[in-house]
Length: 332
Image (cartoon, rainbow, N blue to C red):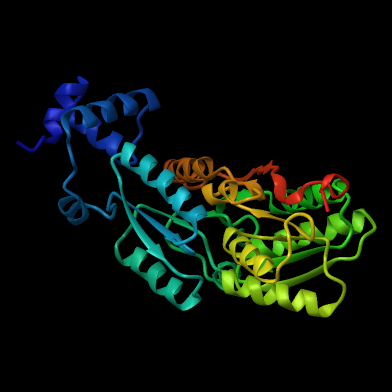
């Protein structure tokens, strides 16, 4: 038989009204909420979302709009968001924009029509700029990409610092002609390009970079353009895993050896980056922490709608592998 809210109340030793508050946004201590959620899991209770929607404006659903579900970065974040929502007795509606602002606008309208309890959004560059004058009606947390300052809670990677760390490592390995390829459809690529340029200037080195679409094919074309523009770089870094994969293919197609002829580095510590030979130096992003923190900020916003906006800035970890070995130590 399907468990009822009264079954949960009996298992938790509380009243049905307390269960309702624990599963909604009512005032209740975190200890008591956890007690109720344990009873929910033990009884297998699942709320009747359709009935709840008829009774209130709260759908018991979290909206999650991501830029590219094919990118393992967003897949990892989505898994953490779904797990946190499940533990809270909530459902998740997942939408993929493929970095298309028009498609994103459709999904934003859908979330309002579905009366989602809250929204987690990785906005395209166009939408991030539009949010300054067209605020959303749903409590929202931004991830990966920043929006207008002071308007939305957000969980972000310190992209400039992470990009600068890659440059510092390459310089320490003896590289001087360091090029970069950066995605152009989001603020993330722009921030990583800014970190690259600032670090190159700090080392007294000229920057040599291009903005490209965040696709493997674009990385190959961008690499060919860099080679045509002047002396071949000694090292090249890229701003996401798709560009890193495209760059690796292009370098090998050109008959260049890694790292003897060119060192390469990038972002996202996907399993394949450690399996290729040589392994690729990358910035590892805290995917699970991003997802969990986004849900935590959303829950805080739902409990305290007028609280000050919070921006959580997380750090990446530089995973060093053979693709950026020191020039003096690499055999000819």
